Image (cartoon, rainbow, N blue to C red; front, side, top):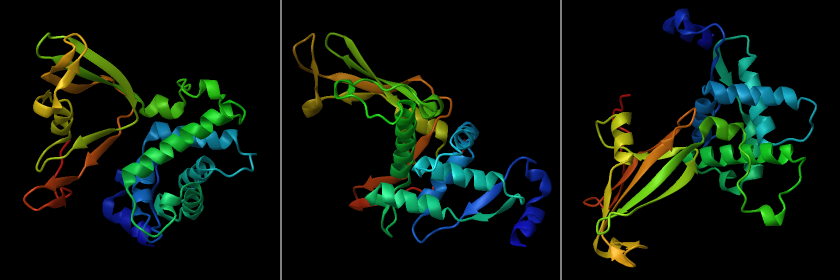
Length: 258
C-alpha cells in the first residue's frame, strides 16, 4: 500500500517500465552496506554482469558473497511491484562470515566496504577462472588477469614528479577502482576533480630525492588520470580536520552540484 502510494505521489512516468526501486532493510547498523549495494545495483553494467553470473552458476551449491549478491539483485529485478523493500539478510549474514570487521553492531565505513566487496568479487571470479586453484607462489607478484570488475571500474593514474633544479620528470602508473576526492563547502564534483590533480610543491623537510641530481631537491608533484574507467566511482571525503576545533568535522551538509 505504501509502495503504490509512493508511486502515485511521484508519478508513474518517473518509473521506467523495466526498472525497480526497492529499499533495503537496515539491520541495525547496515546503512553503510545498503548505500553501496544501492549504488552498485543502479550501476547498470555491474548489475547486468552480476545477473549474468547468477545464470552461469545456477546449479552451484557453494555459497559465496558473489552468489548472495546475485541472489539479492535477482530478487529485486524479479519483483512484480516497481517499488517496495527487500531484506538483504542472506547477504549480510555471508558478509559477517567473510570479514570479522563487519561482524558487529557498530557503524562501518561505506568506502571500506565498497573496496572489500569489489576485491572479493574479483578474487572469486579469478579463482573460478583458474578452476579454484590458488596462484603458484612464484606468480604471487604477477599482475592478475582483469575480470569484469576491472573492465567496469578500473582506471589508471599517473603520479608525476618534476625536479625544479634539473627539470627531470619521473612518473609512475598505478591502477585504481575508485578515486578519493576532497570535498569543500559549496562546491561541485568538477571542482573536486580539479583539486585532485592540483600541483603540490615538495620543499623543506619534504624535498624529493632526485636520481639525476643525486640529492634532495625541491620538486612539483601531481596526480593525473591517464585512463578513465567505463564507470568512475568517486569517494567523497566528507570529513575534514579543523585545526581550530582540534577535531574532524563532517562536510555532508555541503551542497554538491554536478
